[in-house]
Length: 129
Image (cartoon, rainbow, N blue to C red):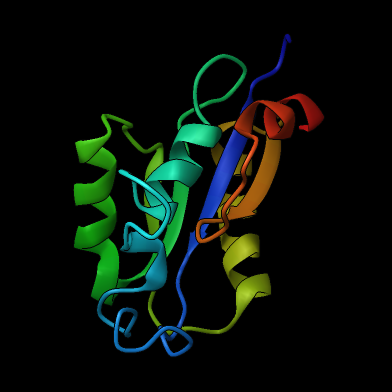
């Protein structure tokens, strides 16, 4: 692969579906629901390594420290952490990430992914990407 994929991990939400395990200050993607890693850490691992640039994280200010702590725990340095001043849904966040990436690497390939999904076969996922 001649051009790396630049992953954009969406990391936000209200934390209401799995309350009290998930709440606004500690979203479900930070919980270890399916093993040793959180859903967020699993997403970061899935989108790192050969063919992938460091991930950019889109998040809110309330959870920015959890994001950086969880990435440090799995030794994945982010390309950047974009903090939404106020939640405005997904499209404006993706636009902000696209503008940020275009300023750094205009020809980059961008892949936007949620950080709270369980992907049972990471190898198949990576092959599909």
